[in-house]
Length: 234
Image (cartoon, rainbow, N blue to C red; front, side, top):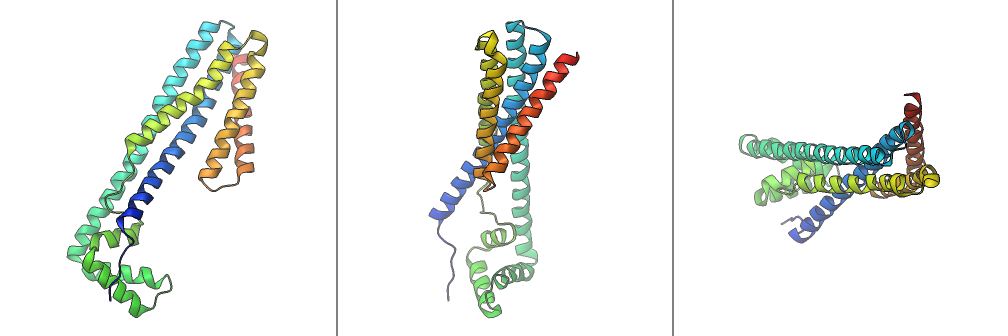
């Protein structure tokens, strides 16, 4: 009797999809942070001074700082995850050599837990471990595909670009709109932008769209109020 994993074509597709979803996640978070951090600085500074150059320089400086900070954080986060996964694979590789029976039992228990009989689960486990031992164990114990790791550089670039694009919207609204429309135009632009990022985050995470959108809009409004208040206070 022979048992097999589904072939590499699907595995590659799954890995590509995981990479895309992770980059989209990083992009949505980066965009949201870019919007809120830049509008926060813009509101604080614009209350204190009406000089358009000063407002623009402050907003641009914050935009660049936010974008590179988000990219650096995303790179560190994904790199840490990648290191952890590689360490787990290394550990399992050693265990297969030093404690094979325990690894075999782990695979058997995995299939028994999914409703397969003890006899059949044992046969499946022995067959898989005779063909692809390390791939089988890391898949069963960690839900990992051997050698398929997310790219920290890709996630960092996605976060860098999205944070920059997100921050540009309030920056342009505040600095390019006519004086009478600067404040209402920027507020409307921010509300629309954070509503979009809330929608996208809910879609990517299979969450409740309405709640995510409302939550993001409320956070955006509170952010603007706080920074406006700080600017007025000082």
